[in-house]
Length: 150
Image (cartoon, rainbow, N blue to C red; front, side, top):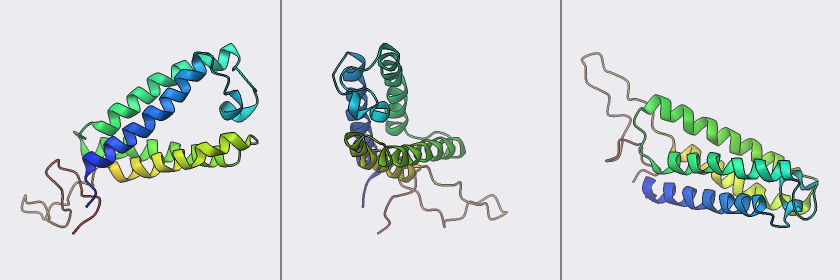
């Protein structure tokens, strides 16, 4: 069984790789052909370097989201679903990029999309009417549905 903690650390690690890449771009690494549509060979123009630096805040928030235990199932489910959908869009955008080197980011975005989708908290179990929740929605010790049931 894949544990949530293992998956969340893998997702966080992948996010740190992407954040490190963006940090290098912000600091002037000559990898413009591999980012932001691949339109700029070499060092990115200052506006995109600022955008790369700003994206570090976004990635920090996503690492936090991936590593935390969802407190409210409904809100957490929405947050993880939205992030998963955004990475699905990023997968398509990277896959159709005019820059062949930038297309290498498509599998990374796809893995992040799948990871956030699998990390979504389970839906709250339906009530049976007598104040007892149904046992059809099995949860692990963290209150999150297991990724694989035995």
